Image (cartoon, rainbow, N blue to C red; front, side, top):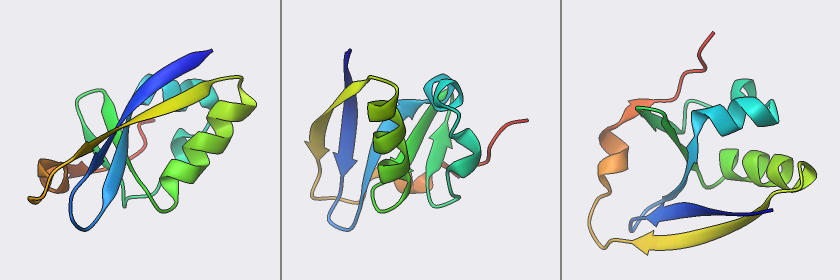
Amino acid sequence: MNHRFPYYQDPGHGWVAVKRTLLRQLGIEDRITPYSYQRGGMVYLEEDRDFATFHHAAKAAGIDPNYLPKHTDKRSPIRSYERFVPQA
């Protein structure tokens, strides 16, 4: 199963946008760090650790993730979103 996920990048960092519901379905919501961000039902997984956690869990679940790069030369607005907090 092929899924597309936006991969936002600014000059200093990057984040993959994933629906919170998918993180729950994969059973990894509690493994995501506060270095990622959230807004609405989306979670923006930081590229160093949380992205890898998601990528490996998605592959294990039979999801073939396709990351679509979206680069800006300016500071990404994602940096001003709320830090990620798992929901109970």
